Image 1 (cartoon, rainbow, N blue to C red):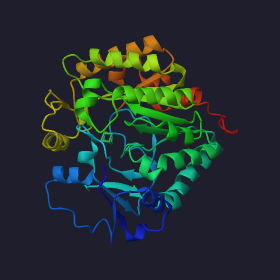
Image 2: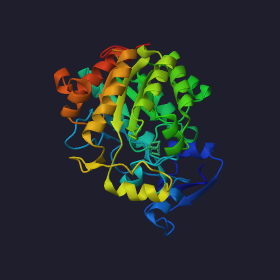
Image 3: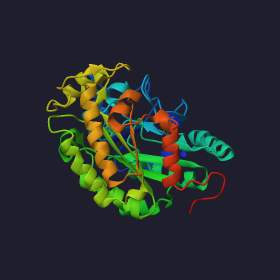
Image 4: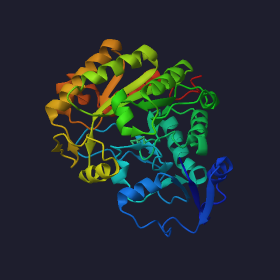
Length: 377
Ligand code: SF4
């Protein structure tokens, strides 16, 4: 998919740059800086498509380890992010990054290991001292594994993470299938959570270009679970069309037919939500899509959402089906209010100590965290 790799002069010499260049089989160019790069003069939707095929290696100057931006006025899960790059070679019509990021191209931070890892390492040490659970992910501004064959970031990160022996879990969130060979190189630890965003077969085919078919994602999850990793699933975004949520129920059934429930650390549900700018960009880039045609309200965070009764009805049915299969699996809503939790699930996170605590407890149970001792293996 990638046609060109562009490396900033100041990014040369870093470990990640050497790694990517040694694996690359496409044209490589050196550029003075990303900021000064002469991007083609095209409308933003076209520039986005252009950027999907170009990988930039940059020296990043911001914070690598940070809180998930979450949302205002809805419940967040207290997730932490290890920020390894931005952009994704896959192309989902609903991808928020199309409107959220304002600079084109796939970007990897060349100085990740030299300057980024120490930030995470310090947080892991602190978690060890305090015995507090740390939930870390890399899939907020990128797919955690889509560029893995080229960059190897997830593999190296998993190795370093497990060596730290902290009460922490690393979630690698993706829509790609895993190769057996890659999986065999990862340290087999329940503290590594391999997680997949799931949708119906129809939505996966129509709206998620470049992503693995549903069955391949589930087969990868089944293999990961068998090999001792923890796994998670995110039904997000649920796209509500007339048959919904009935179309999602067989997907839930398939999850539990293929994957051992005791290896599933959590399952999240979230309906389609988007900032107003996204609709125009996405409809320009994906003229066939109909997902933005429904009726939406503007939520308290300024994002468009389906009407509350529609969201609640979908969450309730999917939640009930999950619980029929596995009453113990932690299910949570992404960016919803306590009222929606109560209507859909019959309880609010506050009644269970708060959403972060619910997830920490799920991690302790499934990922076998032992706060102040050694590697769970
Ligand atoms: S996989 Fe995720 S990051 Fe990549 S295009 Fe789809 S929604 Fe965006």
